[in-house]
Image (cartoon, rainbow, N blue to C red):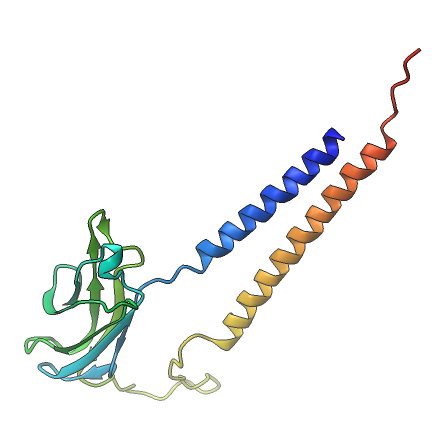
Length: 190
C-alpha cells in the first residue's frame, strides 16, 4: 500500500511540474517591430511592440532608444490594456551608415519589466553590395527570410520526443514499482 501511495504521489508531482514547465515556457517576451527595416538618417519610422507590462500590472512607459539602453531617446510610449505600443520615431540625423539597434525598455516598481528589452535592427543607408561573384561551385548568397522552417520542425520534433521519452520512463518506473509490490514476499507471522 505504501508503495502504491508513493507511486501515485510521484506521478502527481511529475504532472504538476510538467504543467508548471509548460506554463513558464509559454510566457511571452516583449517584441518590437519596425515599419521598415532600412532607411536614411533623419527618416521617420513606425515602431510597434507587444507583450509589455500594462499600467494595471505596474508597468511604466516604454522608452524607445537608438543604439542601446543609453542611446538617444527616440520616443516614449504607454502600453495599452493588451500591452501593445505604437510610436513614430525619427532616426537620428547623425546616424552613420550600417546596422543599428532600436531598443525598447520598460521598468516596473520592482525593476526591469519581465521580457524586456525588446530589440529590432535598422539599416541606415543601403545594404552593402557584394563586390565579387561567389567562387565557382559555391552557392549564391540567399537573403535571410526569418526563422528556418527546418529549425522550427526540428525544435517541435525534439519537444515531442522529449515528452514521449518522459512518458516512457514514467511508465517503466510505475511498472517496476508495481512489479516489486507483487513480488515482495509477504511476511508471515508464526
